[in-house]
Every structure is written in structure tokens, then in C-alpha cells.
Amino acid sequence: MSGPRAARGTSTTLWDGREWPCAGRYARVPVFRYGWAPSGLATVRQLAGQDLRPAGQDVAGWLVWKTRPSRRGWAYLYRVDLARPKRIPSAAQLASIARCNVVQQWCPTCRTDVGYRIPRSLGECVDCAETAIERDLARHTNQHLNAPAGAAQQHSNERVGHPVGVVIEHVEFRESA
Ligand SMILES: [Zn+2]
Image 1 (tube, rainbow, N blue to C red):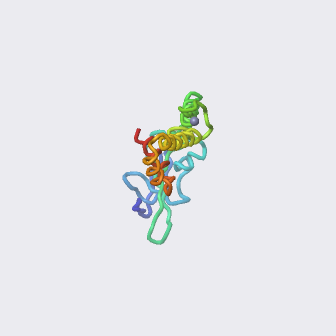
Image 2 (cartoon, helix red, strand yellow; image 1 turned 60 degrees about the vertical axis):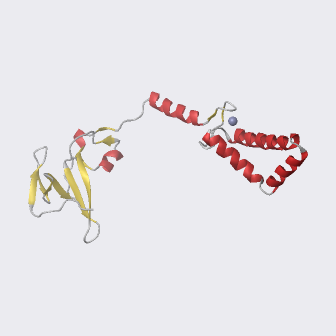
Image 3 (cartoon, protein in one colour; image 1 turned 180 degrees about the vertical axis):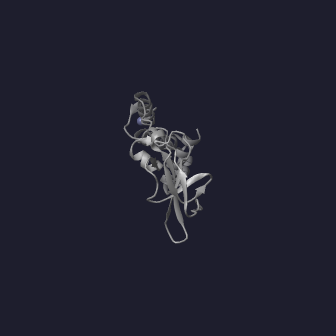
């Protein structure tokens, strides 16, 4: 990451008229070494710590520090006097978020709030999905019972060693539907 590069022996006139030593400019913005930034400037993180945000103001400075011999860390500096309070979601927004969560917990099959997020792959609560699988297995079994004896025998022989195959088929069918 290439950040602003410091020059030596320069100073800048701050927004409030103070003359302040800086380490050159980068993109016409003064560069301050770590520990040398003037009061009244803060990084986004420092602002956030006071529940403030830059609120669309221009970058007022760069803060640079050495991380490793050949590398520099840097951060934008903003004027604290132009910062605004962080947006806090309104009651209506919070309600909408809560409603969203309720929708994701609402099983369309048994029409209850199941209290956990319903997996999209199932599209219904785990209980309903399991019941559906059982129902499907039962249907398969009934088909076998109703089918001519020879066919049923043949069919069930196919399934005997692969009971899981029925379940996988069922889930895949529901997903594509
Ligand atoms: Zn359900």
C-alpha cells in the first residue's frame, strides 16, 4: 500500500488559522506524522469512538506512521467540528428489521413462528420438511404395496440398499419446484 510520502521542514496553515508543522502535502492535503496531528482533527475510527461520522466533509489531513522500515500506515483525518452524530436507526427502521427476521422464521407450511431462521433449501421449518420426507417415504411404500407383487418386489429391491436416495430425491424436487 502506497500512502502519502513525507517531506521535511514544512508547515501548514490550519482551517482555524493556526500554523502547524507538517511533513509535506499529499494531494494538496497536509500530512501529519503520528503524534503530530493538530487538535481538532480525528480519524474515522476516533470519530466513531465519539459516535460521530465525517458527514461528507473533505479530507483535512493525512496521518502517517511507520509500520515496518519500508512501509507506512496512513489514515484520513477529518475536522471534528464538521463531524455529525452517527445515524441511529429509527424505531420504524428497527421494527422493519425485526419484521424481516420474523419473516425468515415464519414457516409457510405449519404457519408458525418457529423461532429460528428457516433454511432456504428447505423452504419450510425442519419439522415440516421431515414430515414431508416421511410422507414421501410412506407414499413410496404404499405404491410398492399397491403395485403388482412382482413389480413391488423388484422396486423395493432397488431401494433396500439405498434408503437415503429417496430422501435426496425428495429434497432436490422441492428445491427445483
Ligand atoms: Zn413448519
